Image (cartoon, rainbow over all chains, first blue to last red; front, top):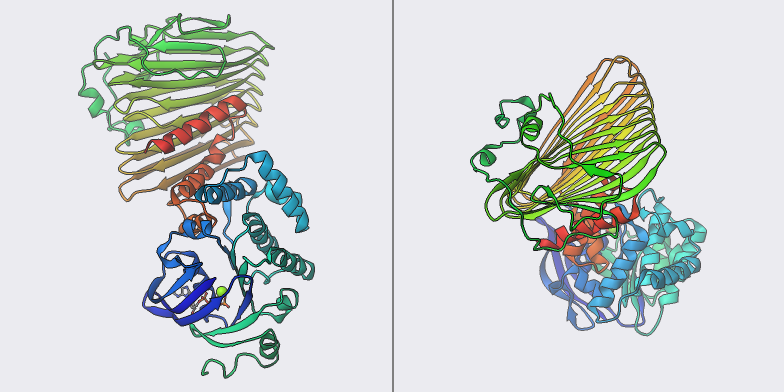
Length: 247
Length: 366
Ligand SMILES: Nc1ncnc2c1ncn2[C@@H]1O[C@H](COP(=O)(O)OP(=O)(O)OP(=O)(O)O)[C@@H](O)[C@H]1O
Ligand SMILES: [Mg+2]
C-alpha cells in the first residue's frame, strides 16, 4: 500500500506540492489527472527519489517503509517503478544490458539469484513479443534514436521485466498511437494482481477506457482537490478543470 | 646524454619532466616477478626491467633479437633511447602471412630507481597481418622509455592494442613511429590507467593512397596522475583516412593532455582526417588540455576536430538508479559507455575482453 500524508515539497524557493494526501491500497489502480504544472511529475519524482526536491513536510510510505528515507535504487528494490514522462537516452548503453543489470540489481538487493544473459534474453524476448514490439529494441542503445512512442513502449517493457509492486506511469500514453495505447494498457493490466498497485498519470480519458481505474484524483496547484470513481474522468473530459482549483 | 625536453619546446608545453629529471637512475638489474603476468593463451614475449626474458617467453619464429640502428631523429626522447637502448625485438612478417596475435609484455620490478629504453622494430610485408597486445606494468620507481618503429607494406594490417598499467610511481614515455604504405592500415588503441607521469607520442605517416590509421586512446586517471597523448599524422598521399578518438576520464587532481597535429601535403587530395577529444572531469581539480593543429596544403580535404568536456549527467544517473542500479555501478556503466567509441578499432575479441576487464579492474581499484 502506498500512503502519502500531507506531503509538501519545494524546488528552490518554489512550493510545488502543497499537502498531498493519497492512499493506494494493494490491488488498486488510481488515476491522477490535473492541469499542466500542477505537480504530477514532481510527485512521481519525489516518490522515486530524484534529487533537487526539498521535502518540507509530510510522509510517503510504501508497505510501511519510509520511501523518503531511501535511495532511489532501494526504492526500486522495494518494488517502486516510475515510467518517466520523458525517458532518458543512454548513448553507448545497450538496452538488453541495461535492463538485465537493473533486474539483477533488484534481485541481488532482494537476495535472489541473478539471471545469466541467456536466461534473461529468453524472458526479454517473451516480454517483447507480448508487447508486440520489434526485436531490435533490445539491441539498440537505451532510447537513443527511439521515436516518442518507442520510448514510452520501452518504459513499459522495463516495467514488464522488473515486475514492480507499485508502478507510477507519468503520461505513458502521450505520444502513443491507438494500437500502442492498447498494447501499453494491456501491459499494465497484465500486471494487475492483489499485490500490485499503480498510479496512472494522464491527461486523457482515452487511456482509462483501457486501464479502468478504481479511483480518479485531480491534482491541482499541488493538492488533490477532488477524488471520485472512473466517471470523474468523463466529467473532466466534458467540463475541464475550471473551478476545481478553488475547491 | 641528450637533455630531457623542457616546456620551452612547443611539443612539451603541457608536460613537465622536472620530476623525472630530479631522479638519478641506476642500471637495471635482473628481478623477480612478483605479480602474475597476463596470459591470454597467446605467444608471449616478456621483458623484465627492460631485458628480454627467454624463460618467460614463448616467442614465435618471426620474432628476432634487438638490432641496434642509427637514428638521426630530432625527438629528444628518441635520441635518449638511441643512445641507451640495450634490448628490444624485431618482428618480420613475410608478405601474405597472417601471423595471428602475440603479447608483448614489459614488467618492471625496481628496488631502486631504474631506467630502460627498449627499441622495437616491426615490419609487415605486403598484405601481412598481425595483432600485438602490448602491456606495460610494474612496481617501484622507474622510467620506461620505449621506441617502436613500424613499417607496413602495401595492404598490410597491424592491430596494436596497448595497456599502460605501470606502477603509480613510474614514468612511461613511449614513442611509436609508423610508416604506412598504400592500402595498409595501422589500427591502434591505447588504454592508459597507470604511471605517475606518462606520454604516448605517435608519428604516423600515410605514405600511399588509401592507407589508413586509427590512433585511439582512453586515459583513465586518478590522484595526481598525468597522461599525455601526442600525435603527428602526415597525410602524404591521396585518399587516406586518419581517425583519432581520445577519451579522458579524470578524477581528483588528474591531468590529461591531447595534442594532435594533422599535416596534409599538397598531393594528399581527398584526405579524411578526424579528431574527437572528449573528457569527463569528475572533480573540480581535474584538468584537460586539448591542442588540435591542422596544417593543410591540399584543397580537397575533409578534416574535423571536435572536443567536449563535461561531467556525468545527473539525469542519466537517476534514470539508472530508479531502475535499481546502485549509484556506483550506474556511474561505472556511464563511464564505460563514454569509452565505447574509443575501443572501436579493437576488433580482436580476446584483446577487447582483456582491455574491457582492465577498465573494470581500474574502476574497482578506487
Ligand atoms: N527544476 C525546476 N525548477 C523550477 N521549477 C520547476 C522545476 N521543475 C518543475 N518546476 C515547476 O514545478 C511545477 C510543477 O511541475 P510538474 O512537472 O510537476 O507539473 P505536471 O503536473 O507534471 O505538468 P504536466 O501536465 O505539464 O506534465 C511547474 O510549475 C514547473 O514549472
Ligand atoms: Mg508532468
